[in-house]
Length: 203
Image 1 (cartoon, rainbow, N blue to C red):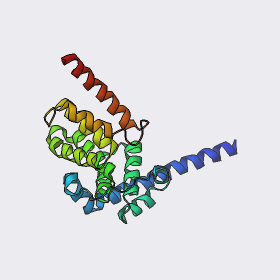
Image 2: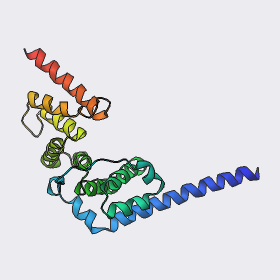
Image 3: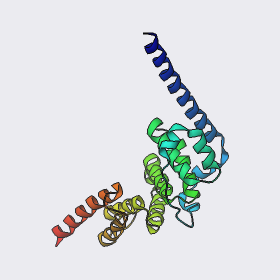
Image 4: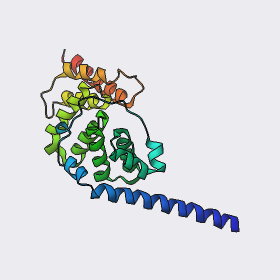
């Protein structure tokens, strides 16, 4: 019985400790003016000149978020993006994850720009549509899968941009260039099928 109580105490202590560390990370993000300034801008204002290779550090950031924030602040955009995903998944905290996606974008991770643009639409609606579409278009030009899927979807809908099925199909093909197993490719293929069905119906 003593061993069970001790085990439960250790688990509880670990969970409390991990939560307190994550809260400390959130407080640090809130205190940094650099994040606040990024959040006030459209990602196109600080869109990177080159698309750096994406590396997944989500597992590392789940275990040690403080270390990830430190590496992010030192200029490694992949740690910003990975920590953003951890915070988004664990806390559904929009400000902190969006701030980190913005930082990753500025540091050269184009997928971070796409994520930030998607967040703008989710939280601000049509008022951010012009900015988001410009960001998706730029991201797609750098072969970002989700950037192309999002841009292709809006081209197909004709929302915020003139409807263009042919252009949408071209853009959506780019979403699958890195492999058909990518989730962005699967969504792109679904959208392409819907577009083709409308084209066939009109012929």
